[in-house]
Image: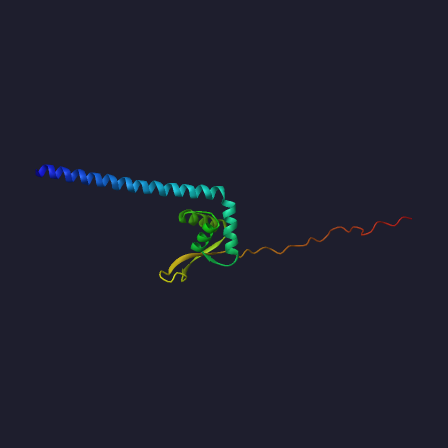
Length: 143
């Protein structure tokens, strides 16, 4: 009798472990699909996403989380991981400047977040070329 009880408990434990494993693998598969969909969206709509990001940052420095929420409002459903990778690439390419700052906007959990702004591009002033030859301003008079 004790052996049957032991075998029954072993089978129940094995079934629970299998069910837990399937649940975890389903969640991982779902997360992987969401990540792939977000990456595919980034690849196909990168120009439009960058235009929205630059437009948001042009109004002044913004926290990354705020930009991410605004992108969702514009219909670009990026995962946080894909968004972070996008911003790292933008920083690397010199499109944005980022730094860590305390975000006091969230009353219950203030935290250190990345804040972004447009870089201070210093362009040389336009040089007006000086003409090297003189051209007549009016046609020569006919004699």
